[in-house]
Image (cartoon, rainbow, N blue to C red):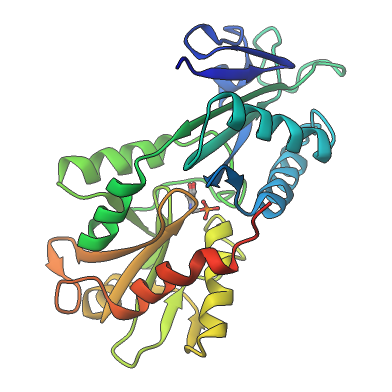
Length: 285
Ligand code: PLP
């Protein structure tokens, strides 16, 4: 079955789907994106993802290209035309096409909207989580507005590649003060020897992950101790457990950091329980 992409009001074959070379996303990374999980054909946490999309667009002063309801219809149609059962739907909105000039293009320039969807290999993801993953640490050399889900991801690309080359799945950014901020495409968490779950507050320096928000609810429901505060790499090395969260990886245990085993080197009980219960708390539309 051939894949279909939505591009500015049209459903077109994925292999020929394109935007103009002067799209500002291509020229300046002047755009935002969202990734929403699809599970059993349904969108997971659509409301929160669209809320975050609206916020990202507002911060960059890009107009929402269509109303929320219409966007919901297009997301579903793209999922359905690609026969996605378990996978993701990807949405990207840029400031549009204009003659290259750093400053904003003339008023009336229309944003470009692209939506794609694909299945992922749920069995492979489950196996990865069952084994646990390795992460490495890298300096956080990103700009300050990482709270905006912008397509400007070059430091994340380089960090992820460094992880791959080190035989790891994810890279954790460490800021100038020695605190872990987040992963290249995930939020970062540890569980201390005392059993407290620790993650950096989302007020600055990280993307407020939708999965993170839902996992905070699961933690509260389980009556676990939560410490929303920055943590250092030394704390991470000494942690009982560690894990990452994202819409594509849900809750995935981390079993190795910079080559050192986390806890006893196997996925932790808390991370595994949060993974098991996460979807019970997510909104399914
Ligand atoms: N942090 C970064 C830098 C990300 O790119 C992502 C997801 O792409 C996340 C965190 C996790 O966010 P979410 O749970 O909304 O997928």
